[in-house]
Length: 151
Image (tube, rainbow, N blue to C red; front, side, top):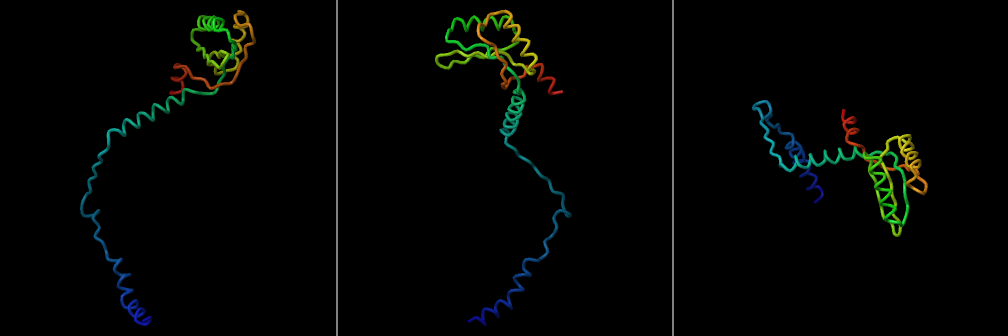
């Protein structure tokens, strides 16, 4: 039985190996191929959404904010907030509530020196009774700064 299998393999083995080497006609030389691409229009929407997401990520950088207030007195917190918005109209006030305190951060400063200037003015005006601290934070760039980055 083993001899029979070896004889079969010797006789038909080369034929199987040669069967894979038959020459194929080269179709690229005889005709010009034309490719038509059909794409889903949702791909354009996905690309636009990804571009918007990437542009939004550029807006947030490391910077500084002022930790202005930690108080349980809501009326006092609103007076401080009003003062900050009137005195510094271009800056944002960020208020969070963690029971029982209202915490308030102020501004989006890229440079620590700018944050120190605002801190000195707030302390000079005396609206905030506690200390004002410069804290590192993730800030949002202003639209005019974003235009400078795109150039």
